Amino acid sequence: MGDKARTIAIVLHDLPLGGSERIAVRLANRWAASGRRVTLFCGTREGPLADLIHADVEVVEADPPIPRGRGSRKALGQATAAFVAKQRPDILFVPGNYHWPILPAVDALPADQRPGVIAQIGTPLYRHGRGALAQIPYNLKTRYQLRRVDRAISLSDSMTDDANRTLGRRITQCIRLPALNDDDHAFVPPASGKLILAAGRLVKEKGFDVALRAFALLNDPEAELVIVGEGERRAELEALATELGVADRVRLPGYVPDIRPWLKLARTFLLTSWYEGYAAVIVEALGAGRPVVSTDCTLAARELLSEGSNGRVAPIGDAVALAESLRQVLEAPAPDPRVLARSVADYRIGPIAEAYLQVFDAVVAQRTGPATIKPFAPFSGRALSIPAGRRAPASVARLRSAWRRSA
Image (cartoon, one colour):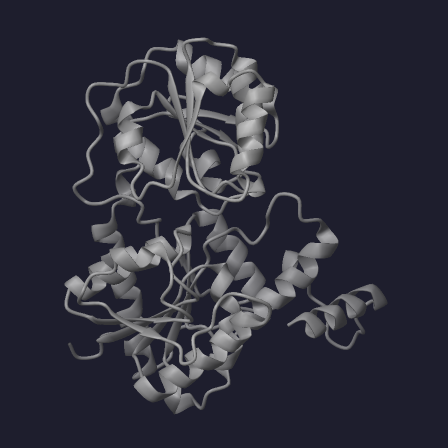
């Protein structure tokens, strides 16, 4: 393969059904199928994603295992550093913001033991609800954690611009989220009925209580709401459905490994989260030919639903606006599933997996030849810059000190 990434290591804390982990496993399977040697290094092998890993992907568990908990990502970083120092992969891929705390330990390795490092930016650096004072230490911490990565991969153009500005280096490029299989096709004909589908863990941040309130406000006796997923708030959501008088039209069937059979029955998909990364489920629903009603919780909603034909976007936590958006979608003629599917044609895994490999190969070639990635200066803008020769204001100094203590 010459100067190519022949060996690729991916670090995952464990194997839950989270978006970053699921995408990482799908990419690992595709990279291994293309002839690369791929290893998943995990704090623990526990989790339902274990069943989706292909046999040609090696899985290595930390010894001793590192379950999630206080300080576990720092411990995972130390274990990852030891692993890559011994195995010497060409590339270490760090999927999603959650795994960035492992990077400082890898950075501390001698240069001849450190692989090329690519970090994925799975969630926007500037998020709803984070104030300016909280954003400053977040940016500082992000710049510290990613200070020595070779490349960063974002999921949208706006995320790319924010990342380059925050990192102070033009090392970020956009590669779309590989949420669809190459052979996925829209369901034909359009769905009949008024089944509304929602999916995700039954936890507070998914906003399923808002989904129930919006469904009750819809006040349509022909409509049904199905929420697939499992979690700690099941009993609370069941009690709320009863309180709202809609329990006879609400179903919570539990965890399902694949939502496509439910999408086939659904008239629309509903996303009510308070915050999401680049929500793959919106891409999956559109790819299946189903319109989406979503809160403004993710860049995917703004980028993929803004035209109106693909669905509607409502303010976060606004049950009244969500109910009206649902009413508009359910009362309008069902859109052509093929048109919706074409709107997300760029999110198929085949070309996206290849685009990642091109980045990996370029990093390997760069590390064995002349450097081609140069930082740009000055470091400024929202990421916080203090002019040379001047002291940082006391408030900024305190923020930096607090951040160092938390790092």
